[in-house]
Image (cartoon, helix red, strand yellow):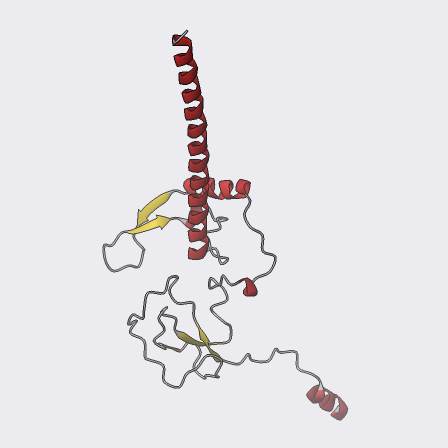
Length: 193
């Protein structure tokens, strides 16, 4: 029995080690527009990567994109839009057929106004309802939030598709005008006979 107790004490533990709390930077605003007061305590000695003790504590570093610091075990900014080539792999540019499909999907997105169940004012919100198209590129991986970067990119794809369509129509009109000019010239030549 004595040996069994010693073996149990020396056996590796099956519990996973507690992950260390540290300060992480949040995404901030999708478009940097300068620091705005969010009524958070200003950061003093807190720095990204430094350890911290109070999980979910936050502070405001005064960032121009309104990113805050958060004490947690996992980086909350893993889904922030980063567009540097050096941060990506398996890059594939949208071909015209795929761009057209994205544009059609965006154009078929139903827009709505609503009020949140727990909001305290009468303000109307505007946008789309995730339940209508949960597989949209404009829906975040968690299925419960809008991916603003995806939504914006869908809009850009739609603008590119419409620009391509307008260019094709412009070229078609130029060809038709050239044919009309040619027919006019032939008609004038026939009148002179």
